[in-house]
Length: 336
Image (tube, rainbow, N blue to C red; front, side):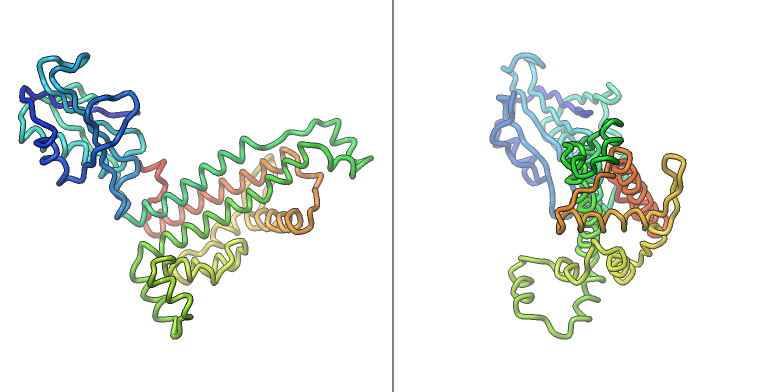
């Protein structure tokens, strides 16, 4: 949902006068925005992950039609998923323009002559950096859920008589192809989150430097050229497809015990499962599918749904352990 804040001014400032006000605030002119022929600007800051969606400013000259033919209209808006800083920038640009050119406000939230209330949780750069990794995990789970292939019961019965022929069933093949993607979703979360967390914590980076008494020339060259960060280099020391290896990385550098999550028992379809056992089964099957080119006939819709459910529950517990243990809020869908 978009939020709009308008300023209607009786003055007729030139583009140069307007830009003298807004450019010091970090606004840049957009070359083209579909559907708009008036000057448009965007605020989107990435240095410290300030922006998640950014915000826009459109300017309607008095001769424009549709909004207000007697006044210059400054229209600032942002979309759902905006950060605290995005909304602040939206308020601040209208505040600065009002101080310079005067005018009346129109707030789309309240309909009153006021600025937008900013009650969005202000996340740290580290929380947002890690939040992108977690958001990618959530989106990938959604993609996977739409790719599961159901297999009719008749074919399942036939599989007992002709197991080889059943491996030719499109649904079985599709679910087997989906399995490595499920493992990749888990691996990407653990690795990308690990890198983002360390990249955002200089003290941890110092510990890594202190540990490395000697640095390979190739590694040193990558660091000096900014081709890789120290977090990316250190992550290569671990396999995030190996649960014990991932646990060691998180325990050593982040102070999180992944086995608090992995050893949990969860209920699915009236049965109880240990998260670690299900994830390890996925990883083992993935190796067999990728490296052995084997097709497993038991990978029906219900089995893939079990794997997806366990990944979702792992993700929820992963978020919770950071929230409770470190008050670290990285779930962008929850906090923004």
